[in-house]
Length: 300
Image 1 (spheres, rainbow, N blue to C red):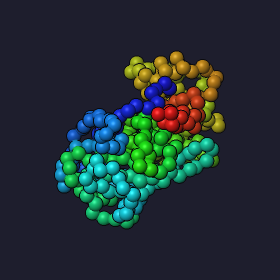
Image 2 (cartoon, one colour; image 1 turned 45 degrees about the horizontal axis):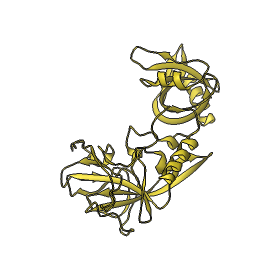
Image 3 (cartoon, rainbow, N blue to C red; image 1 turned 180 degrees about the vertical axis):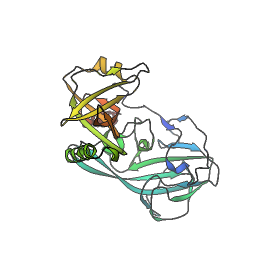
Image 4 (cartoon, rainbow, N blue to C red; image 1 turned 135 degrees about the vertical axis):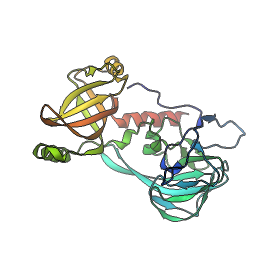
């Protein structure tokens, strides 16, 4: 699907939608902020951070499992207080499972602990009415490049990244793994034997396939169709507007890469069907998407 590869020259401060701004009782509130700032010559370095308006003293929770470290290399002085969490993410790249190690930094948050932290654990309290979150790594990391349209910036030995993995509107190209055929078959066989056992689940899948016909366009602008994977039916639900992209860009019978969020199984004509939401699609493998981004970064 055609999209811009990057947002150029901006460090975006947008509403941060991760769990760090929620409480276990879900009583805290935050206001959306859309403040675009850029680094210009002679000005202080501003990392490409996601942020939100909060209350001073509001408790902040971790978005990841990791380790809050006490000693770390100097950070940009844009934030007064910081919490630095060393963490990692698994992703699929060039035919294998890889691990990205990086630091997740919470700006204008006063630390209340160090050491091991679990997702949704308290990590500190806000010291300003606007907090920020960004990632950094000493390498030009394929995974961190893949999760955001915002170009990372290099500063004093580190690459600084927008934390797109926590933003629902950002496409996470390398979070989608090729399907495990055995898992597919086991679930399908179980559903056929025990129809009442069908459950909902979340399973992100990268499926390379070929479409033999266009989906059916519905009145609300979405589209639907059923395709087969290893003789098992997948019910595809295409987002509003995707039909026109598909019509303009795709030739039936060619390879297509579908980024599917499988949400469970339903029944169609008395047979189980995998319920699949098409999060995105591309005509090239995800590696090419990421490599093109890295090329653009290195040319900047």
